[in-house]
Length: 235
Ligand SMILES: Nc1ncnc2c1ncn2[C@@H]1O[C@H](COP(=O)(O)OP(=O)(O)O)[C@@H](O)[C@H]1O
Ligand SMILES: [Mg+2]
Image (cartoon, rainbow, N blue to C red):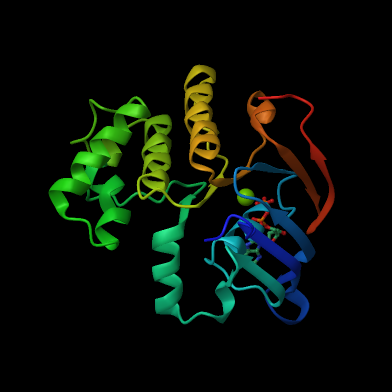
């Protein structure tokens, strides 16, 4: 991945759900560039297309029109197998609903991206324990997700998105279930990851308490990006 390649390059991305009279234009032509080393926030009212946009960016959903490249690669042009492999190596995703596997322990959940990448189980769990300590869950590694609070589950989801050191990290409302202090701790970890490792981070959020962590903020409404502002805060 050359340093001059954008992490994300979206051009005229259109996504329409449903058919006939039920059609919803969730994305009405999105242009968006995100550089490595950049923390981009996406804000806007509920239903404006934020989750749809990051799902397209992360290759979870195919757009109907336009193109979206991640590190210069067009995900829609890949086979399912290629896409899975690319995502497993290069993308970390924090789902709004966490999407933890209920029958796996916390450490096993966090290990999954490493196991997919062929890391041995003992090594994967060692690294899982290390990153779980960084999100304040070092004493919960053997618990099941159902034995955790919402905020703890959210931090497990964040640890899972970071463990394989992806170039692009995409988070849907990553602090929604966290108290102020834990939210700041998690954001500092994410911000450090971006700065020290030159990663790209896209965060969908409503949480005004974390706005200052952004390098740029894209404001969405009704399937479009209205404006993109550079943060005035140096952080
Ligand atoms: N699977 C789906 N089927 C039909 N419509 C959907 C689906 N997912 C989202 N939508 C619609 O697309 C629009 C954008 O949704 P979404 O991307 O979830 O917005 P946000 O994350 O900003 O709240 C909304 O009008 C929503 O109702
Ligand atoms: Mg959403």
